[in-house]
Image (cartoon, rainbow, N blue to C red; front, top):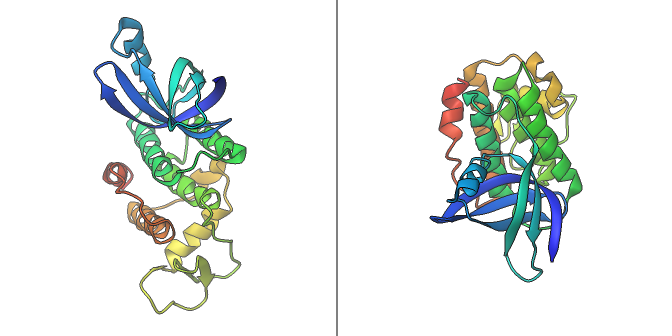
Length: 240
């Protein structure tokens, strides 16, 4: 069936000299794998350049009910980023987020709220002028809700965050899967903070790295099977 949908690119891999397989999170159909042919032609070569992490497209494709791989008919950019291309900081964050999404979103189930969250995150990443060094942390924290592992906020001070229970606690848990009071306080702030306010969060490189490492561990504890995030070290180096 020929269908149209908006879609966000979360991964792609070369399939042959003239084709690739792209993984999108779509507005109408959830996660889809799509065969893209003709990328070695003059026209296709230009189209291949569109395949950058988190680019937002308008797609026309042949979708098959009982197949995992669908075929692209036409595509165009639905949003043209102005700052992400050519900016190593934004590009690295986009790559990191796309890896997180590719690892965690597995099902084809439609979730318009999730799609809107990802699209809004992309446009915010492209548009913000301050707070960029904290954006990946904000995204990881905000995405816990959509991944089904979101903690609730707390009014406690000088508390710990128990990764196993996903709760803030006034006492240090008797196991190592925790965030200490400083990282727990930053996590609690991020849970309540819109992306547009992240410039108000002043963090050192060490604080940023500690929370990033802790949040990835939290994801792994509750969503086993997440593969190694290849862009992680680049992100740590850039924002240390």
